[in-house]
Amino acid sequence: MMAQTNGELPYYEIPEYHEASYTANSVAARMIDGLGFRYYWATESLRDEDLNFKPSETGRATIETIAHIYGLSKFIRNSVLSDNKDTNKSELAFEVMRKQTLLNLKVVSEVLYNTDVPFQLENTEVPFWNIISGPISDALWHCGQVVLLRRSSGNPFNSKVNLFSGSVDE
Image 1 (cartoon, one colour):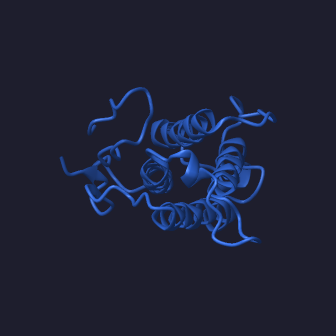
Image 2 (image 1 turned 30 degrees about the vertical axis):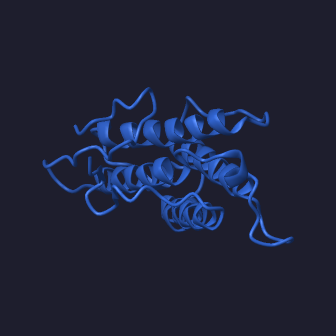
């Protein structure tokens, strides 16, 4: 695996792919890893003024978008995992919410990668196809919004992040 040792948070870099084969599980896990990597860097080093930035009076503040992504990560985790669910209903501080979002995504990815049995689409609370086109795609969309909002508030995305390779150019 590539470096994951930036503190305790996953997705500083995206894990190397498993070369054995493409399976439904490995493709789904890789989608989650891509989301985790993008979320990590979209939310890295956000300042209070970034979190509170609103593009307009009626628009969402950055922190509200991040809270929505956290909710999506909970939905993904709780739909895919049969146990070990994220049942938190408390409002979380940004750093705690960021960490829990990343951990939610990491646990789902690990379960998908490490399950020998093919993922049973019919055994999820909602059809897994809907999880891909719904919360996974929505969370990716909102990561892009966070990047745009942080740029608008004067704190652009780290230019050393390589979204193609899932690495950081040091």
